[in-house]
Length: 588
Ligand code: GLA
Image (cartoon, rainbow, N blue to C red; front, side, top):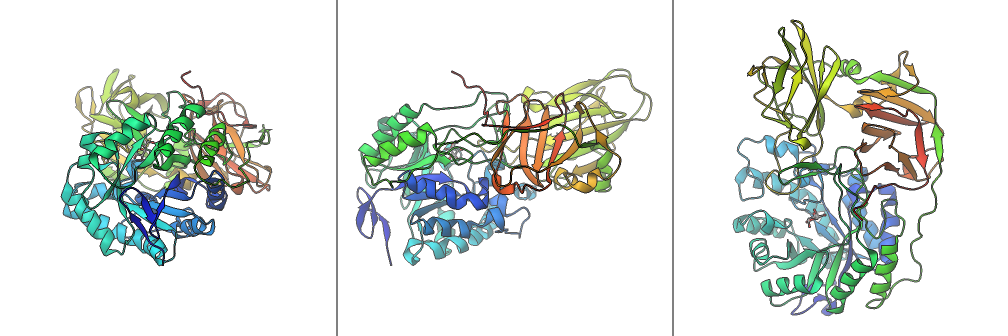
């Protein structure tokens, strides 16, 4: 059987020096019917390896569940990598960062009283062990030592930026080895001496993460680890976007120059990302380094292979650089051609969201406002409701709002409390005794980096009105995926003109079967979109993204359904598909 090892200066494949030319591709961000296509395009770039994280929360919506169907079929993904003649690196976390909801840690984990994440805490380690055993049962039979594609596994992720619990790292090593991992175990950390020290162990091979200033960053790695192959585990050739900020791009020539500098000194690389994909549904993460900043739906990342799987100028520039160091296949990936443009004007059916939530059943009663964790909601929306005594204009306040509260008094919208503005209060207008206060609360994505990972979502009490405790809440999880179905629109609900929110609207149309489409969301406010029942994720007028990618694999050509959850109000009620993505304004 082949071997893969860490040598004095190089990775050793069957004892021979080997350079890893890898590209990051997250199976959980790409439609499974497109995995083979994206992997092939990585090989056509000249890469020999595919790297993927494993998102624990994508597989384990509840403890004890480990879903490997459809888009979660890691084994099939690795088999496709092998079929393309490539190697694989697997990074199962348990924490992955990755701009992914909660950095991959399941929301249910946070409901265990006293749980301590990312350290050697027994309850956390018990859950992590269960998880790793399930993932590694898929990975270990596919190691290169057993005839498969997997050449390395990473422990944790940039742990040195978070903690220094070496016992935790040792436990992770033990669990991985006990589960049968024979290939090298790696760590990755940013290019800072202290992070490199904290994030690894002598028995692990260190790698580094950076996107520029190659020589300087490699020197930090070399100082931390005098021998062994130099690898940039995340060569940041693009970057992610937050709502309300600009779209990040990196110059293709400059990025190619930094890649060249890495390859010129014999370094190994994992392009982060080779192909980013999409944060569909509620999967996006967020940052909070003082201000809460949720991440956008597109994870295009300005990567060499764009969100729709087309080659970019960066792809061509990287291919040229790689060709100086390694054989590159003759055939390259195609560039984008215009997508079909079409508009759906009529045939809309619209229902009020707060009217149809009643079909979801009864809420539960709480004295104090509960968090989403208290009502076992992992992501998305919750409706909080209470009655108020007669009030003059009064301040409604919470300790914190995570993350966005739309407030209604007797069904009339009275405002929004938005965490990204650090808001936690709102003035209610005068209301008669017994008026109904309703709050539609949106979790906009769990923080995926830093000390706020794992925090609770929802309304964080105490709730007060005019400075006095506001008690007696009826709380209903609002599963919008369950509402975005045809039966929700069964009554008399034909509609035309601008779309008032919060509401759900539905259209059907024969879209061009199998064609990738770009849905123009620039005329809408804030919400989510489903095409043929697939939740494509969130849109928001504050941008920067103004289109949503619709993978051709979900477009049937026969009465395709489009469902819109509009929370605010859409002046333009037409559904428009445009020729190319609009990922938004850049900062230059
Ligand atoms: C770090 C993390 C990745 C990702 C990148 C930024 O390097 O390890 O998971 O979050 O930052 O895209």
